[in-house]
Amino acid sequence: MVENRPWANMFAHTILIIGVALVVFPVYIAIVASTHGPGEFLRGTLPLLPGPHAIDNYKAMWNTGLSRAGAPPAGQMLWNSFVMAMAITIGKLSISLLSAFAIVYFRFRFRMFFFWIIFITLMLPVEVRIIPTFQVVADLKMLNSFAGLSIPLIASATATFLFRQFFMTVPEEMLEAARVDGAGPLKFFKDILLPLSITNIAALFVIMFIYGWNQYLWPLLITTDPDYYTIVMGIQRMTTAADGDPQWHLVMAAVVMAALPPVLVVLFMQRLFVKGLTETEK
Amino acid sequence: MASITLEGLKKTYAGSVDAVKGVDLTIEDGEFVVLVGPSGCGKSTLLRMVAGLETITEGTLKIGDRVVNQLEPAERDIAMVFQNYALYPHMTVYNNLAYGLKNRGFKKDEIEKRVRIAAKMLEIEDFLERKPRKLSGGQRQRVAMGRALVREPAAFLFDEPLSNLDAKLRVQMRVEIKQLQRRLKTTSLYVTHDQLEAMTLGDRLVVLNAGQIEQVGTPMEIYARPATMFVAGFIGSPAMNMVPVEYLHARGANGLLDNLPEGTDIVGIRPDDMHLAPPEGTHLIVESTLQLFEAAGAESHLYVNLADSDQPTVIRVSGQPPVAEGETLRFYVTRDALHPFNSATGKRTGD
Picture 1 (tube, rainbow over the protein chains, first blue to last red):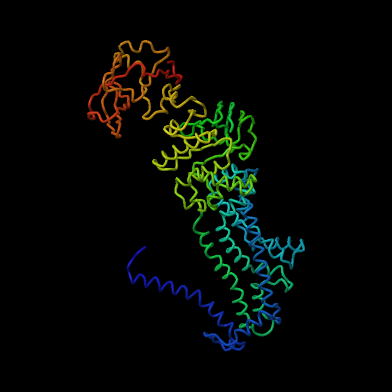
Picture 2 (picture 1 turned 45 degrees about the vertical axis):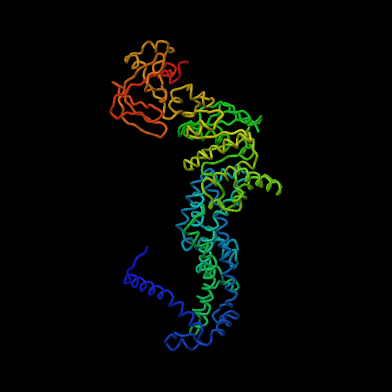
């Protein structure tokens, strides 16, 4: 659109700037707060400019954590979160790619039935099935383990559904051409379908990684061993220190560190991510 | 190189829809056979059955001496060119051509050699490193052909390969396909709904209607002696005119219709066999009113209604005759231009 209306332009920009400010300000506060010493927060006014203690705070958080609040070092919690998020992401992607492949390209009994069963689970978020899931995981002795953290979250109707929709837009002749070219089902999947869905995979990778990273309730329930604490639930533990005030400057340092990996993932995958959500290569 | 033999081939879809109702056909080694018919006549289904993309409900399909009913497409030693080309969008042209060979376990230098030869033949050498997305329609078409070519299969199967091209390119590719097939002498089966394409490409034509063969023959045989009213109407453009014998009798037949084969109650007349000037020898004279005059360069089409019957009829004449719409025209038809049919059976009655 080419328009020349300066007032409308200014108005639009004002709205946008206000919107950005609303989103960015709390993040800024968190960053600023993580650079001050322990006493600053008890005075009742939040400082708006960075303080001198940034390196000390981050070092303390990364190496030792808040042992008084029962939180292990942030470095370890970040690693735990990363492992869990990656396991969930990769697991979700591979399972949903394969199940979408089966549903779209194979004719078997109760095909549509299975599709609808998968689809219906879309309506059941983790929170709804959390008690039975906990029971299952506990019976399988998977409490306090990476398996317990990630496996119950791997099944994904959303990704299956999205891949199914994408596969259905791939022209049928593509499969037929591959068959004439001597490619069996798995070869077709590997050589044709996977490369074609690469942008979709990237987009879902970002979404799933953030979903996995932000898991809070589930890790909180099944981990009692600090070795398996994830950063998102760890932060919650830090704020509910049993005695005394929460160490806000350290908590904020942990918060900033927890927010970084998803940002990095989005930054690195941005090009593919946007492509995957908007265009298809056909 | 091999012949293809179809014996009583049938295809029934779920819900007992008969798409192909028993087709017997032999395609000789090196022959170019065109399947032609209106949409929904089963021609594509038949081709896909030969390719192995559709299962065969009944009958036997042989390629060479092998019965291939149960074989996967890749095992049938055929190559197929699809209507929308079905190129792999993420692979370069080179890899598109090489993919089938790689899957068959060819050596790298052999693949390289074959791809280069095919690319040279189709003049796509300059695009080998490009992705199909960056090619024009005609170039994609060539790549699709190249993919069939490199395999050096026993038979080529074409599924309306030219219908996505513009008119000019279509004519050009048609000529190239014909020349290529002449040179390679590979048995080919070609599906189209375009009767001009069918006439010009095929060594033999197979006219299909409603899942059955109406007529098999060389293009000129079929044009000169259509076996059924359907073939008469389908092959040739504009379509053949059908005039009831009774009507011609009533208009005064000069005894010309006396020796028509028994059972003839309708005759077909090609638009180009209706002359505006009286020919030598005995002939019919029919009067009509000109409804529409269509000038098409070297020739003109006259859309007329026959006098006292309102039956629409098309006449093709060369050049532009001096006629005006609404004028009463007289045209002349000789005996040998009449194709006798029986309207109840739809079959030709003789001659």
